[in-house]
Image 1 (tube, rainbow, N blue to C red):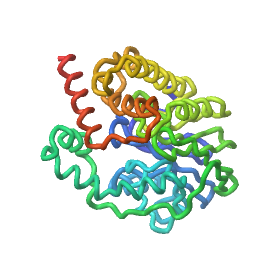
Image 2: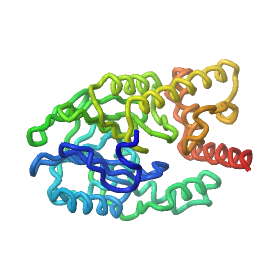
Image 3: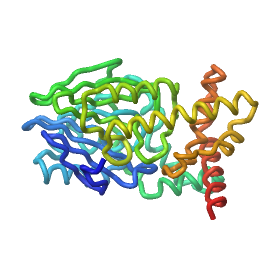
Length: 322
Protein backbone atom coordinates (compact mmCIF):
# COMPACT_ATOMS: atom_id res chain seq x y z
CA UNK A 1 0.00 0.00 0.00
CA UNK A 2 1.48 3.34 -1.03
CA UNK A 3 -1.22 5.83 -0.02
CA UNK A 4 0.79 7.02 2.97
CA UNK A 5 4.54 7.25 2.69
CA UNK A 6 6.37 5.33 5.38
CA UNK A 7 8.31 8.21 6.85
CA UNK A 8 8.55 9.33 10.45
CA UNK A 9 5.75 11.53 11.64
CA UNK A 10 2.04 12.20 11.58
CA UNK A 11 -0.13 10.92 8.74
CA UNK A 12 -3.67 12.20 8.21
CA UNK A 13 -5.62 9.07 7.29
CA UNK A 14 -8.93 10.92 6.98
CA UNK A 15 -12.06 11.87 8.91
CA UNK A 16 -10.24 12.98 12.05
CA UNK A 17 -7.97 9.92 12.26
CA UNK A 18 -4.18 10.13 12.35
CA UNK A 19 -1.32 7.65 12.48
CA UNK A 20 2.08 8.34 13.99
CA UNK A 21 4.72 6.24 12.23
CA UNK A 22 8.28 5.44 13.33
CA UNK A 23 10.43 3.77 10.68
CA UNK A 24 12.03 1.32 10.51
CA UNK A 25 9.50 -0.34 12.79
CA UNK A 26 12.15 -2.48 14.49
CA UNK A 27 12.71 -2.99 18.21
CA UNK A 28 10.95 -0.16 20.07
CA UNK A 29 9.99 1.86 16.99
CA UNK A 30 6.24 1.55 17.36
CA UNK A 31 3.29 3.32 15.79
CA UNK A 32 0.47 5.17 17.55
CA UNK A 33 -2.77 6.87 16.52
CA UNK A 34 -5.15 9.70 17.26
CA UNK A 35 -8.94 9.62 16.91
CA UNK A 36 -10.64 13.00 17.26
CA UNK A 37 -14.02 14.57 16.74
CA UNK A 38 -14.10 18.25 17.63
CA UNK A 39 -12.58 18.59 21.10
CA UNK A 40 -13.05 14.90 21.90
CA UNK A 41 -9.98 12.71 21.47
CA UNK A 42 -8.58 9.23 21.98
CA UNK A 43 -4.90 8.39 21.72
CA UNK A 44 -4.09 4.86 20.61
CA UNK A 45 -0.88 4.00 22.47
CA UNK A 46 2.02 6.13 23.61
CA UNK A 47 5.68 5.50 22.78
CA UNK A 48 8.73 3.89 24.38
CA UNK A 49 9.84 6.91 26.37
CA UNK A 50 8.62 10.32 27.46
CA UNK A 51 10.73 12.36 25.02
CA UNK A 52 9.46 10.46 21.99
CA UNK A 53 5.88 10.76 23.22
CA UNK A 54 6.19 14.50 23.87
CA UNK A 55 7.52 15.00 20.35
CA UNK A 56 4.57 13.08 18.93
CA UNK A 57 2.04 15.00 21.01
CA UNK A 58 3.53 18.33 19.92
CA UNK A 59 3.16 17.32 16.28
CA UNK A 60 -0.42 16.26 16.91
CA UNK A 61 -1.19 19.59 18.58
CA UNK A 62 0.36 21.52 15.69
CA UNK A 63 -1.78 19.60 13.19
CA UNK A 64 -5.05 19.28 15.10
CA UNK A 65 -5.03 21.53 18.16
CA UNK A 66 -5.23 18.39 20.32
CA UNK A 67 -2.08 18.11 22.42
CA UNK A 68 -0.94 16.51 25.64
CA UNK A 69 -3.26 18.55 27.84
CA UNK A 70 -6.36 17.81 25.78
CA UNK A 71 -6.12 14.05 25.30
CA UNK A 72 -9.21 12.63 26.95
CA UNK A 73 -8.53 8.90 26.70
CA UNK A 74 -5.51 6.72 26.03
CA UNK A 75 -6.03 3.12 24.94
CA UNK A 76 -2.98 0.92 25.40
CA UNK A 77 -3.27 -1.93 22.92
CA UNK A 78 -0.99 -4.12 25.05
CA UNK A 79 1.58 -4.05 27.82
CA UNK A 80 4.89 -3.72 25.98
CA UNK A 81 6.63 -0.50 27.00
CA UNK A 82 6.91 0.87 23.47
CA UNK A 83 3.13 1.25 23.57
CA UNK A 84 2.65 2.64 27.08
CA UNK A 85 5.77 4.20 28.63
CA UNK A 86 4.67 7.65 27.46
CA UNK A 87 1.36 7.51 29.34
CA UNK A 88 2.68 9.96 31.92
CA UNK A 89 2.80 12.71 29.30
CA UNK A 90 -0.99 12.99 29.65
CA UNK A 91 -1.63 13.01 33.40
CA UNK A 92 -5.27 14.01 32.98
CA UNK A 93 -6.21 11.25 30.51
CA UNK A 94 -8.19 8.16 31.38
CA UNK A 95 -6.12 5.10 30.43
CA UNK A 96 -7.91 2.00 29.20
CA UNK A 97 -6.43 -1.44 28.59
CA UNK A 98 -7.50 -5.02 28.81
CA UNK A 99 -7.37 -6.54 32.27
CA UNK A 100 -4.63 -8.93 31.15
CA UNK A 101 -2.51 -6.08 29.78
CA UNK A 102 -2.81 -4.09 32.98
CA UNK A 103 -1.48 -7.08 34.92
CA UNK A 104 1.47 -7.46 32.54
CA UNK A 105 2.35 -3.76 32.74
CA UNK A 106 2.77 -4.05 36.49
CA UNK A 107 5.10 -7.05 36.04
CA UNK A 108 7.58 -5.30 33.70
CA UNK A 109 8.06 -1.66 34.80
CA UNK A 110 10.42 0.69 33.00
CA UNK A 111 12.88 0.47 35.92
CA UNK A 112 13.45 -3.19 35.11
CA UNK A 113 14.32 -2.32 31.51
CA UNK A 114 16.61 0.47 32.68
CA UNK A 115 18.51 -1.95 34.92
CA UNK A 116 18.97 -4.49 32.12
CA UNK A 117 20.11 -1.83 29.68
CA UNK A 118 22.58 -0.34 32.18
CA UNK A 119 24.02 -3.77 32.92
CA UNK A 120 24.65 -4.37 29.23
CA UNK A 121 27.56 -6.72 28.54
CA UNK A 122 27.82 -7.57 32.25
CA UNK A 123 24.86 -9.85 31.54
CA UNK A 124 26.74 -11.54 28.72
CA UNK A 125 25.59 -11.71 25.08
CA UNK A 126 21.96 -11.26 26.12
CA UNK A 127 22.70 -8.01 27.93
CA UNK A 128 24.86 -6.69 25.12
CA UNK A 129 22.11 -7.46 22.61
CA UNK A 130 19.47 -5.84 24.83
CA UNK A 131 21.58 -2.70 25.29
CA UNK A 132 22.23 -2.53 21.55
CA UNK A 133 18.65 -2.82 20.31
CA UNK A 134 17.28 -0.44 22.96
CA UNK A 135 20.13 2.07 22.88
CA UNK A 136 17.99 4.96 21.54
CA UNK A 137 15.43 4.83 24.36
CA UNK A 138 15.40 6.45 27.80
CA UNK A 139 13.98 4.02 30.36
CA UNK A 140 15.24 5.94 33.37
CA UNK A 141 12.99 9.00 33.11
CA UNK A 142 9.56 7.43 32.73
CA UNK A 143 6.57 8.59 34.76
CA UNK A 144 4.63 5.36 34.92
CA UNK A 145 0.87 5.64 34.47
CA UNK A 146 -0.97 2.37 34.50
CA UNK A 147 -4.57 1.85 33.33
CA UNK A 148 -7.35 3.60 35.21
CA UNK A 149 -9.99 1.37 33.61
CA UNK A 150 -9.81 -2.22 32.37
CA UNK A 151 -12.11 -4.56 30.51
CA UNK A 152 -12.43 -8.08 29.19
CA UNK A 153 -13.76 -9.09 25.79
CA UNK A 154 -15.13 -5.95 24.16
CA UNK A 155 -15.79 -2.37 25.15
CA UNK A 156 -17.47 0.44 23.22
CA UNK A 157 -16.49 4.10 23.54
CA UNK A 158 -17.67 7.37 22.05
CA UNK A 159 -15.22 9.96 20.79
CA UNK A 160 -17.56 12.81 19.98
CA UNK A 161 -19.93 11.24 17.47
CA UNK A 162 -17.53 8.44 16.57
CA UNK A 163 -18.11 4.93 17.86
CA UNK A 164 -14.91 3.13 18.80
CA UNK A 165 -14.83 -0.61 19.53
CA UNK A 166 -12.12 -2.13 21.68
CA UNK A 167 -11.79 -5.82 20.87
CA UNK A 168 -9.62 -8.06 23.00
CA UNK A 169 -7.94 -10.68 20.80
CA UNK A 170 -5.17 -11.81 23.15
CA UNK A 171 -3.49 -13.80 24.36
CA UNK A 172 -1.48 -13.70 21.15
CA UNK A 173 1.52 -11.36 20.86
CA UNK A 174 1.07 -10.66 24.59
CA UNK A 175 -1.47 -11.71 27.15
CA UNK A 176 -4.07 -9.03 26.45
CA UNK A 177 -3.82 -7.62 22.92
CA UNK A 178 -6.57 -5.21 21.85
CA UNK A 179 -7.74 -3.95 18.44
CA UNK A 180 -9.11 -0.39 18.24
CA UNK A 181 -11.79 -0.40 15.53
CA UNK A 182 -13.47 2.75 14.22
CA UNK A 183 -16.24 1.22 12.10
CA UNK A 184 -17.75 4.48 10.87
CA UNK A 185 -14.40 5.49 9.37
CA UNK A 186 -13.51 1.99 8.17
CA UNK A 187 -10.26 1.97 10.10
CA UNK A 188 -8.53 -0.19 12.68
CA UNK A 189 -5.45 0.31 14.84
CA UNK A 190 -4.06 -3.15 15.55
CA UNK A 191 -1.23 -2.73 18.03
CA UNK A 192 1.30 -5.52 17.71
CA UNK A 193 -1.09 -8.01 16.21
CA UNK A 194 0.52 -6.63 13.05
CA UNK A 195 4.22 -6.21 12.35
CA UNK A 196 4.45 -5.20 8.69
CA UNK A 197 7.76 -6.03 6.96
CA UNK A 198 9.11 -6.94 10.38
CA UNK A 199 9.15 -10.29 12.17
CA UNK A 200 6.21 -10.87 14.54
CA UNK A 201 7.18 -11.65 18.12
CA UNK A 202 5.07 -14.15 20.03
CA UNK A 203 5.68 -13.65 23.72
CA UNK A 204 2.42 -15.33 24.69
CA UNK A 205 0.49 -17.30 22.08
CA UNK A 206 -1.28 -19.55 21.33
CA UNK A 207 -0.57 -19.16 17.66
CA UNK A 208 -4.15 -19.96 16.66
CA UNK A 209 -5.36 -16.92 18.61
CA UNK A 210 -2.97 -14.66 16.71
CA UNK A 211 -3.96 -16.11 13.34
CA UNK A 212 -7.59 -15.74 14.42
CA UNK A 213 -6.96 -12.06 15.21
CA UNK A 214 -5.58 -11.57 11.70
CA UNK A 215 -8.66 -13.27 10.28
CA UNK A 216 -10.88 -10.96 12.34
CA UNK A 217 -9.15 -7.92 10.83
CA UNK A 218 -9.49 -9.35 7.31
CA UNK A 219 -13.22 -9.83 7.91
CA UNK A 220 -13.68 -6.19 8.95
CA UNK A 221 -15.05 -3.58 6.57
CA UNK A 222 -11.92 -1.43 6.76
CA UNK A 223 -9.74 0.46 4.31
CA UNK A 224 -7.14 1.81 6.75
CA UNK A 225 -5.12 -0.65 8.84
CA UNK A 226 -2.53 0.90 11.14
CA UNK A 227 -0.14 -1.75 12.51
CA UNK A 228 1.83 -1.62 15.72
CA UNK A 229 5.06 -1.58 13.71
CA UNK A 230 5.72 -0.86 10.06
CA UNK A 231 3.87 0.96 7.30
CA UNK A 232 0.11 1.43 7.08
CA UNK A 233 -1.16 -1.67 5.33
CA UNK A 234 -4.07 -3.42 3.68
CA UNK A 235 -5.65 -6.85 4.02
CA UNK A 236 -2.94 -8.44 1.90
CA UNK A 237 -0.43 -7.25 4.49
CA UNK A 238 -2.52 -8.78 7.26
CA UNK A 239 -2.60 -12.08 5.40
CA UNK A 240 1.20 -12.07 5.15
CA UNK A 241 1.45 -11.87 8.93
CA UNK A 242 -0.95 -14.79 9.27
CA UNK A 243 1.07 -16.69 6.65
CA UNK A 244 4.29 -16.16 8.64
CA UNK A 245 2.68 -17.43 11.82
CA UNK A 246 1.28 -20.51 10.08
CA UNK A 247 4.65 -21.17 8.41
CA UNK A 248 6.61 -20.97 11.67
CA UNK A 249 4.03 -23.17 13.39
CA UNK A 250 4.43 -25.86 10.72
CA UNK A 251 8.23 -25.70 10.75
CA UNK A 252 8.54 -25.66 14.53
CA UNK A 253 6.14 -28.59 14.88
CA UNK A 254 8.27 -30.70 12.52
CA UNK A 255 11.35 -30.08 14.60
CA UNK A 256 9.54 -30.58 17.90
CA UNK A 257 8.28 -33.96 16.67
CA UNK A 258 11.83 -34.82 15.55
CA UNK A 259 13.17 -34.09 19.03
CA UNK A 260 15.17 -30.96 18.25
CA UNK A 261 15.73 -28.45 21.03
CA UNK A 262 14.38 -24.90 20.83
CA UNK A 263 17.91 -23.67 20.11
CA UNK A 264 18.54 -26.16 17.34
CA UNK A 265 15.12 -25.53 15.78
CA UNK A 266 15.61 -21.76 15.84
CA UNK A 267 18.89 -22.14 13.97
CA UNK A 268 17.55 -24.81 11.62
CA UNK A 269 14.40 -23.14 10.28
CA UNK A 270 15.03 -21.47 6.92
CA UNK A 271 12.72 -18.47 6.69
CA UNK A 272 12.39 -18.47 2.92
CA UNK A 273 10.10 -15.67 1.74
CA UNK A 274 10.18 -14.13 5.23
CA UNK A 275 13.97 -13.98 5.49
CA UNK A 276 14.15 -10.31 4.48
CA UNK A 277 11.86 -9.15 7.27
CA UNK A 278 13.53 -7.14 10.02
CA UNK A 279 14.59 -8.69 13.32
CA UNK A 280 14.45 -12.23 11.94
CA UNK A 281 16.18 -13.50 15.09
CA UNK A 282 12.80 -13.29 16.82
CA UNK A 283 12.29 -16.79 15.43
CA UNK A 284 13.96 -17.88 18.69
CA UNK A 285 11.15 -16.51 20.86
CA UNK A 286 8.49 -17.76 18.47
CA UNK A 287 9.86 -21.30 18.51
CA UNK A 288 10.14 -21.22 22.29
CA UNK A 289 6.50 -20.15 22.65
CA UNK A 290 5.35 -22.77 20.16
CA UNK A 291 7.27 -25.52 21.94
CA UNK A 292 5.60 -24.49 25.21
CA UNK A 293 2.26 -24.80 23.44
CA UNK A 294 3.11 -28.22 22.00
CA UNK A 295 4.20 -29.49 25.42
CA UNK A 296 0.99 -28.22 26.95
CA UNK A 297 2.74 -26.82 29.99
CA UNK A 298 3.14 -23.37 31.51
CA UNK A 299 6.94 -23.41 31.82
CA UNK A 300 8.14 -19.96 30.75
CA UNK A 301 11.75 -19.54 29.65
CA UNK A 302 13.50 -16.67 31.48
CA UNK A 303 13.60 -13.57 29.31
CA UNK A 304 17.37 -13.26 29.66
CA UNK A 305 17.75 -16.70 28.06
CA UNK A 306 15.52 -15.71 25.16
CA UNK A 307 17.54 -12.57 24.53
CA UNK A 308 20.71 -14.66 24.61
CA UNK A 309 19.32 -17.02 22.00
CA UNK A 310 18.16 -14.12 19.80
CA UNK A 311 21.65 -12.63 20.04
CA UNK A 312 23.12 -15.97 18.98
CA UNK A 313 20.73 -16.33 16.04
CA UNK A 314 21.43 -12.76 14.90
CA UNK A 315 25.17 -13.30 15.11
CA UNK A 316 25.02 -16.49 13.09
CA UNK A 317 22.78 -14.91 10.46
CA UNK A 318 25.16 -11.99 10.09
CA UNK A 319 28.15 -14.32 9.80
CA UNK A 320 26.46 -16.40 7.10
CA UNK A 321 25.50 -13.27 5.16
CA UNK A 322 29.06 -11.87 5.22
